[in-house]
Length: 54
Image (cartoon, rainbow, N blue to C red; front, top):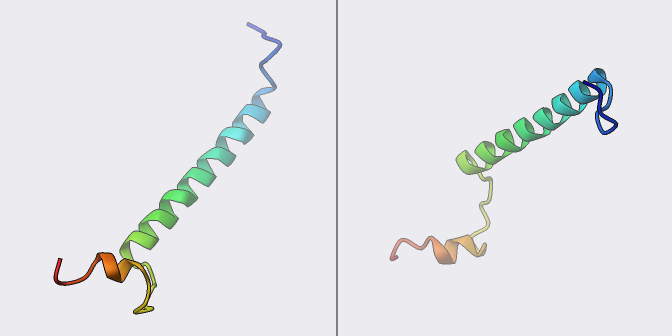
């Protein structure tokens, strides 16, 4: 079946690989920042929210 909106197979595969790589990169960054955010400034707003007395 041939459709005018359907491109060549190699183009579809390339786009799928690119989208998959970007998605995987986003998940890796998300877990990296969840596990070790790297923020140590005592005046950062998160320390107002995450105070020990809450």
